[in-house]
Image 1: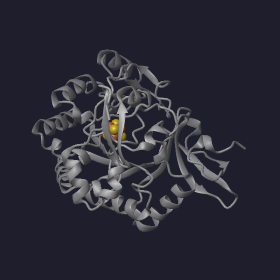
Image 2: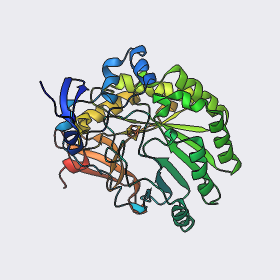
Image 3: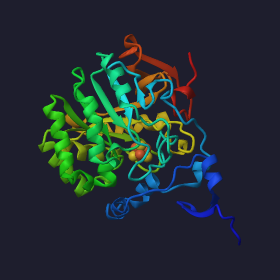
Length: 359
Ligand code: SF4
């Protein structure tokens, strides 16, 4: 068989396929990237058959419908690379690269691309934050901030640390799963020390979706950073075929708790183009959330089952005997909506708020 110069044979979980670069671009297929460390961890953990779906491409990515901006990130961007959706929190996109690319990523439109949505004008962003004293914390995200050099991260902190009303600097990362040795860099320890000395909390939000991702290297580095005062939270995404099992997620959250990492959000998978095949129905998701809670002690039940919707962060509470899905706004742009319980009629197979009829 003869291939055109732009054709390439790509490995997918279902087998190999000849793809052209334009076909990949048209379908917004994220490049394939996976660290050697994670490849070994997938095998050594004994959970290869689940973890492979996190990083290995699938034919389903060509077919999965959805949008590339499910939470309204574009509409909440106030300065290029900086979003302000909820009063107290600023979201800074510092890179479009990650150590490995998760096939379910909700920022497929950015990761692995040379994106214009990445922050460049930090002086402008700082002026914006200065003018918003209600903002108490900034979350560095992307992409994975820890792919940046420590020197670059320090440059970003040069802008943020002098702002008196910022109480914490939060950094979202999956690097602890993909390349935990990154956290052995002594200059990173000095960076966290800077945050403390500026009188602010340093918070790392890890992203463990599965107990099999928590390596001994990850645990050692987390314990070492915690001993230096870094706080840890974990967020997970509920993913079909990866962790749609209360036993697995309960084990993941119990292990996080044991390491001093507080399970925080269990995200409902988003209807992202090329990734919606990872979605689990709300009915099944609620069964899983209840099953996790049945397996955890009181102090380990710290997660919320959350749909990060265009309108706000919605906690998914229950499917009532009246056939309605009960929910509550955990975060909303309108403070009066936060905490209010609301419901919608359930529709079988619904995975997202927009799948539920109003009424
Ligand atoms: S590490 Fe985070 S930003 Fe990067 S691909 Fe995975 S989910 Fe997306």
